[in-house]
Length: 322
Image 1 (tube, one colour):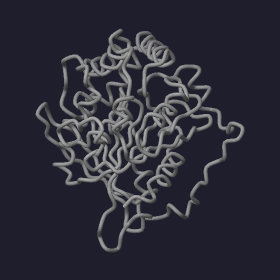
Image 2 (cartoon, one colour):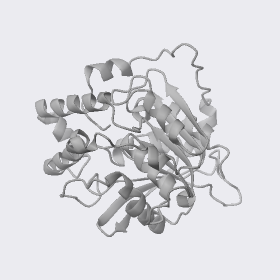
Image 3 (cartoon, rainbow, N blue to C red):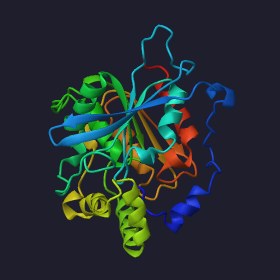
């Protein structure tokens, strides 16, 4: 669920690569299929009522798969990061996704994370839904897009689901309408649909590792303004929220019931923060067409473990979108 120190179980799982019985290997693009100009990047700031968001946009080269000679750009993919994440911690994945899809890819740091403005108060109870109502409208206004595909990792998957349901219009979509306000597709990666004991065990183990290792907090601080106090806030926003008894009954069932766009739920079979029942619930609860792809041997951070494979799976899913 974040850039936590790797547990022994996770470290072992990341070394596994054999597919489970009956799981077909993904059809990978040849190296020549990606041999075009690399994406360009542009950084910008988006204002919200509570502070500024740092954003980065990857734009494909002219020979990318989705590049249009008419100049009409395909809809972008907006990335929602995990509990300890930020733009930088997506690493090579946004560029790989941009190259594989021929679409602009937009990532941003949530308030309190990465380079965005600091946040000092405890995380509010509605922090997951907040992204659809505050951050996404700011991104759309600043970066000039309307329709989009949403991709979220871990808790970012839940935030992306809210954006697919509520659409970033600045208001919640009434139950049953499910318009999504311009979201044409939803991709979740290692996302949670509810709180499992496995989720809590993974968070407790990560918390204990941070407690034992000051170096781990220092590493986290490098991605959050170089400030250890800010890194402690980021860590507390994750650990204290998810381990609080009031959060135990959290569920995405009601939100997913408003998601009518196509859904792809990707999940590693070695994920230390959630079982494969998590993507199954996402697909089962979604109102629109949904499918699950299990990543054999992958743990909780497949966009860093296998960025090209993940990018190509997403590209295939988005291929029929405008």
